[in-house]
Image (cartoon, rainbow, N blue to C red; front, top):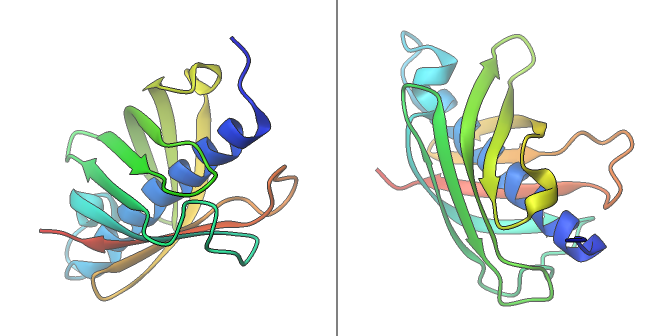
Length: 151
C-alpha cells in the first residue's frame, strides 16, 4: 500500500500533536515531577498549523491524546480540511535535556509509518502544550500542534 504525500504529512502532523501533548503535561506539573510524569494524562487538540497555515485540518480540527505512566500513548486527530485523519499508538520516551519526546509507532492507519520513531520538540505554558517537528529536512515543512490538558 502506498501512502500519499498528504497522508504522510497528516501523520507527521499528528505526531507533532502527540509531542505537544506530552510536553504540555510535563511542563504543567510541579517541578518535583519528572518530565515524563508531567506528560501523563488526556490532552485535547486545540490547533494544527503547517507552514504558518491553520487550514490543513480545517477550521475546527478535533483530537485526543492519551499518555500513561508506563510510556504508552494513543492519538486520534480528525480532519475537516484537506489533510487525512490520523490514528496511532505505541510507546514514547522523553529527553529532559532537549525537551523532546520520541514516539515509537506500533500501529497506525498509515501503515508506512508503523515501526518508525519520530522525535518532536515540546514547550508548555500552563495547561497548553505546543509540539513541533524537526525543522531540518522535514518534507512538509514546519508543523505545530497545540494541545490543552483535559484532566
